[in-house]
Length: 318
View 1 (spheres, helix red, strand yellow):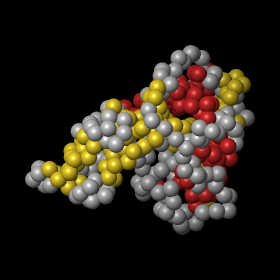
View 2 (view 1 turned 90 degrees about the vertical axis):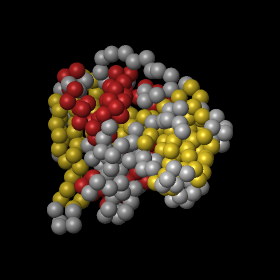
View 3 (view 1 turned 135 degrees about the vertical axis):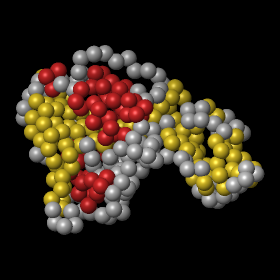
View 4 (view 1 turned 60 degrees about the horizontal axis):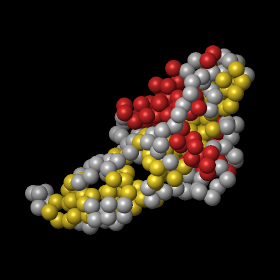
């Protein structure tokens, strides 16, 4: 029998339930929606979660699409899934947990007696710690961003190669190989000996069908490559970046991008122009380094110094 919260599944079975993590402001208990797929045959365990940030919904779209396609009878091993991690932020469609004004993916491994976010992190990390692999499904919030997978443990970590392999197998096409901030699940998981990545499935308001398809394909790639499901996977080469150049606007106005997501850029290439409301050019911003145009703001209006876009740097193929 495999369990997660109130979900409990015997070999060859599937169940859903709730992982209780506290009470709301009216004193009612609340729990995160969870699922257990217990394969008919023995095998490894995959932990997958979505909506660590309350407005990043593409990962939930992946689980909603993929889970019904997985038959426990054909599965070797176990899948433990948490559909909505940042419960409070999801309810109000915000990025951060409004109870403690915290970004959830900075609180791992959490604390059972801590803040709201720390308690949620502790409960989900306990489940993740039982796995052999961890997928933490994210997106670029509401920005426009490439579909990518992030390796966050750092290049000197003993599990770096395992995490990099997991990212390649997931197969978004682009990988950010850069040590992440403290408190990220994809950083803490490898410290516990578990390869972990956080796929960033594009960026959208609501969810985006193309990015969801990338995520569904990536999940099934992982399940087949690591022996959960029958089938072979020959991972495609990935474009890897190990750094970011971030660009802000030198003046206020309206942005016109001169390159598209995924385009290669060289030093001196024009990334964007800023005009006044009548189309008069106020500023032109060029790339400092070679790389790939990785991420950009969605809204055209900017103030002086406001974030506009990012270029992935130190790019290679692996």
